[in-house]
Length: 480
Image (cartoon, rainbow, N blue to C red; front, side):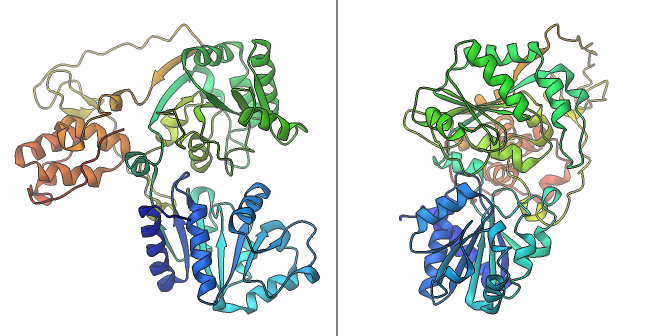
């Protein structure tokens, strides 16, 4: 098993932090190869005399881990405690099954620091109670989305975090596919209601997305965009069945995969290895499903869950032969609500607390001098240009397609060092990699830095704290 350079660095950082804090989160993007990382860590721990317990809450992921790592004792449904080989060095367990084996849990707890516990998808709370019963072991929780708002157990279980490779970094390094994002604006999303779990209710989403006009927008997109394989995520099983039947009526080969379809395994095979170009699902394939040929993701639903949103988008991010991009068509306003898929997020803070809104006022650009100012301004503070108020007209159609990545497309193929201050500002805002952009701006001299400061809307004091420095080195990436 050959590791990529960023995986080797990630493992090194995990080992260092684990030694200092004992219980840590390992955060890396979907598609970064986390299975290889914790398999490597497992083998190293066993070589040093430790036992390793790998915990998953998904049957699909549990089987995948068991097959990839080999030579381990499985603790799944139907496995009795008396049949467990206690001399094994590696154990792979379903969280739900192990939680019911009290004697076995106590035995793992008795191993103390001899045991390393690796929890897959640690943002999911299913194994939290179980993990608390093994307090003296070393713990690593792997996740792509450690968001406290949806995983309040994280700061109770872990003491620190190691941030591994994130989506934009992996795209720029050529490990993930370039990303394009379109929003199909659905007019009646204002009727969405939140349920007890915090997310939008299935009923209110069905009322929004099962409308004839919305489905016609979906049909238009499937005709407009060229794709090899398409995943459509729906709001509910009822909604998924509606979309499947309607698409089949129009002649599309569609696989319907969810927990209430007894033919799901067969239909998924027809998608991955057969003639069907479209797969319609709800939540079953949001994680643990890797099929790189997918190049079109349709979010035919709305969510306020950042982990769910990123997982759905991530299904299209893998690279495959003949695939030069993946596209997200977002019908639920998710990109505007949660940010674009590739943005660098503050996971080092987000895992342990709810981040407060930064209170940054919305801005607009002056058409005459490009100066950024508040949207409420009637005149440009820089050149005194008068802004003409534009009266918005309600679109005649129920839906409307807008590309959220349009501005970024002008940068694709350019070297980062060749960008103008305005283009560098676009890159920083689109990717969230503002510290990287500041390094580049500082290296380009005072005039460049001044223009960059203006286009970013920073205050004059920004330059005082970020002086030009021509000796700064940076990775001169090609923007994809």
